[in-house]
Length: 111
Length: 113
Image (cartoon, rainbow over all chains, first blue to last red; front, side):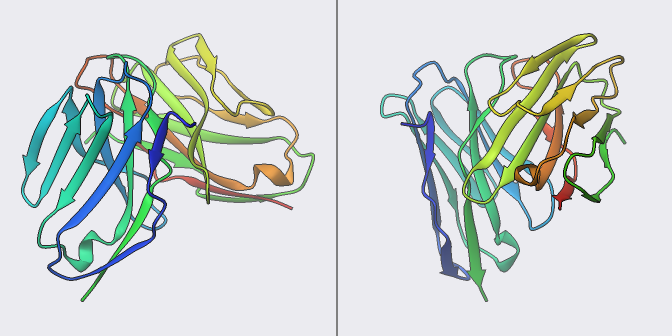
């Protein structure tokens, strides 16, 4: 079992839909959780960052971490065509440790 | 503004040649990382460095080497390029604080013929 599993997708939704992206992990030592967004032929860019459990909201984006279930989610409300990208979850154990990434899921939002 | 740059952006080379990919960051970050990204595999860590003169192997380090002589640069060398090393390569850097996370460069698309 890989340390971080992410739904492979791809995922296609109509504009305005609520999107739920998920990752599960096996290492209970993970404490820092991130979501990166990667547009085609670009480098990943940090979208959301959460430390430990709980929710974090930023505009149309909400990140949730459930450490008891080893499960993290990213919700996108009122999805837009500009949200079409690959989304990667990432996590690490300590403040200065290396990141472990999920494989990423490609999202397409249809106008 | 601080940034992280990679060069070249595209490279075509032949099997057996030595290739060096450059990574330069102006964030003054201690930590630097090299990844490769392939369909079906996601981002895989090749090498990383936590400071000058420090280098460490990642999960797919065979056939690659790095050296860190200053804070700003971490060049990645393919000693003898193989077709299996055709990929997109990303460099990233980060600070050392808990809230710090990795900032990625734009990537280098390498083709080995």
